[in-house]
Structures are given as C-alpha cells and as structure tokens.
Amino acid sequence: MSTRGAREIEFWLDFGSNYSYLSVMRIEALAAARAVRVVWQPFLLGPIFASFGWSNSPFVLQKEKGEYVWQDMVRQCRKYGLPWRQPTQFPRLGVLPLRVMLAGAGAPWIAEFARRVMLLNFHLDGDINAPAEIGAILTALGQPAAALLAQAASDPVKQALRAQTEAARVRKVFGAPTFLVGGEMFWGNDRLEDALELAAAASP
Image (cartoon, rainbow, N blue to C red):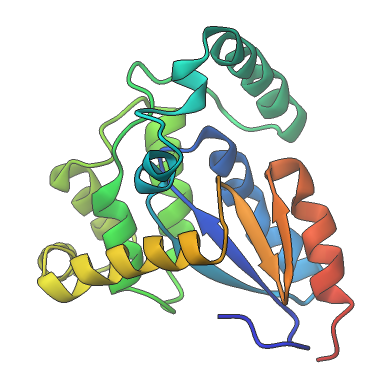
C-alpha cells in the first residue's frame, strides 16, 4: 500500500479491462520520467461488478455503451501508437496472469510481463488464462515458467488474489484502471497523468 508522502502510485488493474490495457502500456515510462514508483495491484473486477448486481461488464450489459467503447478504443490506440484488435471474447478471464503477478510481486520483470499479457489479449486476441500462453511469456522473459505457474496455482496465491479483490472493494475501487496516490483516487486511463503529477509532487 502507498505511504503518505512517498513518490509512488498504486495501479489497480485487471487483464480483462480494455482501458487498463492503455494504462499498462504507458505507465512505467510516464512514471519513470517523474521519478515515481509504480505499485502494481492486480485484482478481479468480476466480484466488484457482482457486488453492484451486475452479471457482466457494463460494456456488455449496455449495448450502446459497448458500441461506443470499441470505437473509442480505436481512437485511443491510434492516439498512443498502440496496436489494437478487438478481442473475440470480452471480457476475457485473466485469473492466471493476475496470480502470476502476485507470485512475482516486486520482481523487475512484472511490468514487461503485464505489457505482454495485455498485448496477447488486445492485440493478438489470445487466451490470457491459458497456462501454455502465460508460460511462453514467462519463458521469453527468462523466468522459471513451470515454477511460477505452480506457485500461481497454490492456495496461498489464490487467497492473495481474493484478498486483493476484497481490499479493492473496501477501498471503494469500482473499476479499472484505478490509481491511488495517498488518499486520492483517480479512475480511468485518461486520469493517469493527473495521478502521476500528484505523486510526483509528494516529498521524496
């Protein structure tokens, strides 16, 4: 969790979230330019939505919103120079990479792992919950894929993801991406720079 006065930003994300894709691909470079540390906070959006009485993403439940968001993603990816392919399955379940993120918490490869998982989902239209796909990403990053996948399937890591999701609910996180800087919340990719500016203004 963030410490008051620290130059850091908590990044709450779900790999099934299309707007989280935009932030995952941008946050590390933007934070480094401001000397801000990124604290990765993976969690599951599904249980948060369920707590609101929603059975699915609002982009699926509301036809007009869904039509809009895919047009918006084309614009936003063009704006940021990111590759884009509308996934054939949305939202895609991404429990496995979230658990891998928790298993490798604090490791230097976490940010690149997150970027590659997002590209698998929103550029290559691949299954981000498949052990073979996630294992291939870990191997490409020079990590012990079998050991990390086994750790991700362990009860302690499963419980850690449940705890993360509950922590998000308690802290009133209602969507992804969400950024927390001290006691301030910022929601949405278009608020990333605002959150980083506040974090950069904190005392080192």
